[in-house]
Image (cartoon, rainbow, N blue to C red; front, side, top):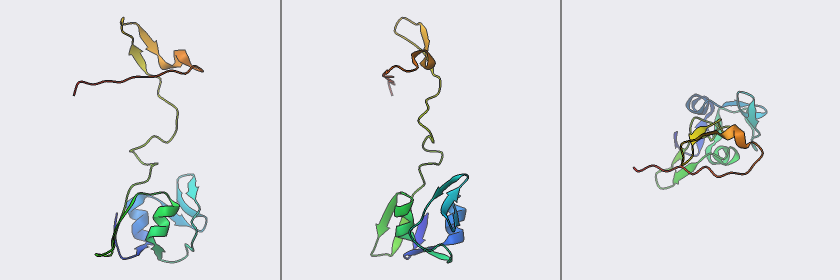
Length: 114
């Protein structure tokens, strides 16, 4: 999201990111992030908001423009550390499920020729 100036309008931030700004902080579904500033105003401090939510932030001070990136709970990152139950062949062609190795440390090495 592109922000002109040092504040972002609450409804614009909510529409662009899917996060709702509430008294308890920025909330999406059942996840809430406390914010270190008042949320009962229409204009929120953009840098403080991005920092509190650990959102990527790029600033261009000469043009007074900020770019706030997407959150890590979105579609570009997994929301848990649980791996899918992969089923892959070994070098001999025998299939192994990831769940077969539950509780053991293992390395999954992926390679592609492109």
